[in-house]
Length: 445
Image (cartoon, rainbow, N blue to C red; front, side, top):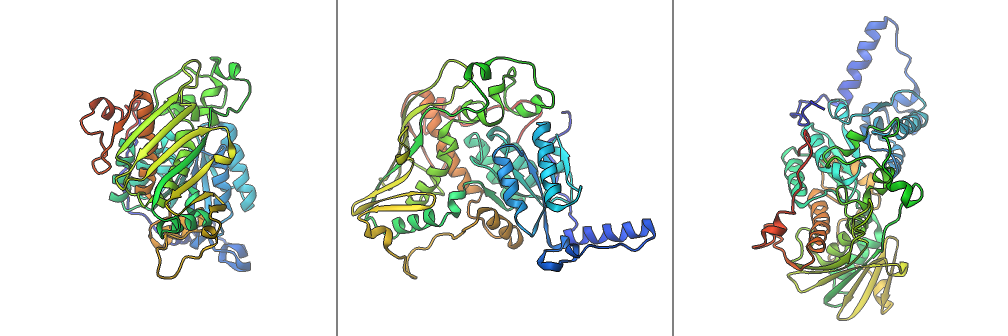
C-alpha cells in the first residue's frame, strides 16, 4: 500500500470516442472486418455500448450486491468492473455481471485504486462499510468519476465537510443511497407538511430498532479471535480504520455495530429517517442547534455501538425531532405532529389523523419538492444532464452529520449546543475534538 491514494484529474476521452478507437484498432490489428452483434449497434430496442455509461461497483457483498443488481437493470449502464476484498463476493459479482451481459468482459479487482485509475470508467457505485466512504469518494471525484455512494455518506462530520468540498471542486455528480428520497409517499408526506396540512409543525418522532441484529452465527463464535480466512484481504478491509485483530463478527454486515466503522442503528436507519425528518422540516441543508442524548452501550465484547437511545434534536424554528430506539415495529419510521394533526410515513404508505390530511392533494401553486421515483435511475439521468440528484452531497452530509453529533452526545453523556453554520460545538473543545478521527496510513481524504 505504498501507492498514493490521490489521483490528479485527467483529460478523459469520451465513451463514444474510446469505443470507436478501440474498434478501429482491433480491426487494424487483426486485418479482418469486425462482426458486430446487433445489440452493439442498438438493435432490438437495446442501447448501443457507445451510448452507455460505464460503471464499476466497489463493495459487492450484501447491500452492494443489491445496488449492483439495480444498475444491471438499466439499459444505458454497462458494469465493466467489480471490486471487493473478499474473493467470494468478488467472483460471485463478476460471474453475475458476465451472465447478465452474456460475455466475459467484467474485470474483478481486490484493490479499488485500480478501478480509480481506469479512464474508461465513468461512474462508480461505492457500497463499502462507512469508514471507507470518504477516502473512496474523494479519490473518485479527483479522478473525474461520478459517484453513487451508500449511506451514511461519512463516518465523521469532518469527513463529510471534506467530501462536500472535493465533490464540488471537481464538478462531480453524487447520489447517496438515502433511497426514501425517491419514494413518492415520503416526498408527498414532506410536501403536505411543508404546505401546512398538519398546521404548524411542532415535533418529529423517529422510531429506530433497538439493540443490534447480527449475521453469521452465535455471538460468542463471532467475537472469537481467529486467523484471517483465505480469500479475505483483511488489511485492505480495515483500510483507514485502526488496526484490530481479526474476528468473524468484525467484517461484512456486522461492521455496523462497531464504532470504528459505523454507529449502530443511529447512522444505519437514522441516516434514512433523520433525512426525511429534516426534509419535512425544511432543514435538510442545515441542522439542529442542540442535542440531548441518553443511551446504553454494550461495553463488553466486540460490538460497542449504542443499543438504546433517547435523542432530542432542537431546531432554530422551535421544532424538536425525537429519536427513540424501540422494539415496537409499528413505531419505526417518521411521525410528524402539528397544531392541526399528525402524519406518519414509512417508505410506501402514509397515515394521518385526521384521515383527510393524507387524502389531500398538493395544488399547482403550493410547495413541490424534488421529484424522483427511482433512485438509481435518477443518478444516471443526472450524470447525463449534469443536474442535481435527489440526494446530493450537501444533503447527504447534513443527514449523516446529525447522526454523528448524536453519537458524540451519547458518548460524552451530556447535552450539547451545535452551530449548524460553522458545524462546531460552540465553546466545547472536548466535543469538537470528536468531529474527526485520525486515519491509518497511507489513507487520507
